Image (tube, rainbow, N blue to C red; front, side):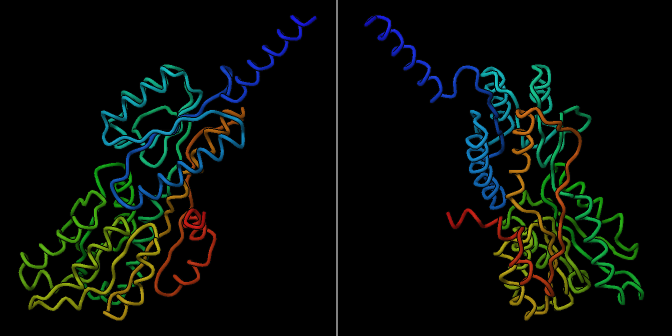
Length: 335
């Protein structure tokens, strides 16, 4: 009898230990995304880490969370989680097409794949979740049309465009903008910023100092693809001490609506520059992770999921800062 009791206790301890470690049969989600190269991505990582841990613990699953500095390292992360036998992968590609072959290995291993933010062209993943970049571009174009309606009726209106990088995100935003923008908008120059405030500021400063007077003074609006990029452009405009008259620049657009930008809306309006931005929260990455959890739960997950955007300008930014999207974005600051 003592031997049987001892054997029972030993078996009980082994089972309990396995339960604490998730067990060999426990399902696992892997979340793979780039390392932080700018503020939006840094915020996204914070939300993704917290969301992955919270959801995995809530539903009783194991998880891996990996970030990488480049495409090569991200491909290695993909190979690792495939070898580990994870049950679903949520992938935020550095650049979709550059990681396409590694992502194909996920499909070849019959592991469900959720793509977040940056698309992989001509690819057959289970689902995609991203901000509604086409609509962001389209509505920015419409906003420019309304803002410059009088000038457009009189002739051409010169503008600049500051893009993010060469991924699908800026392509969609730019295509959306030009699909709705009035034909009288004249694009004088465009830049790829790498989503960097400093890069955008340097590009704007160079334009102001290297261009001729007529070109500079004809600019009326600036279309940027990100709030940090807009911040760099605005800093360059505020710091300009040349002899050209840049007061004709009346509007700078942006995307994501962070507090750093919104807190300066009144400041730049006092300097004669109004702003418009479209909400695109770092917290929405958790929605992609939830899709991965839904897969593990046996729910149907497929197709393209778009996160709605909201227009924010000088007339409504204070109300936006009291709303749910803004509150959720900064909710981790309170923990």
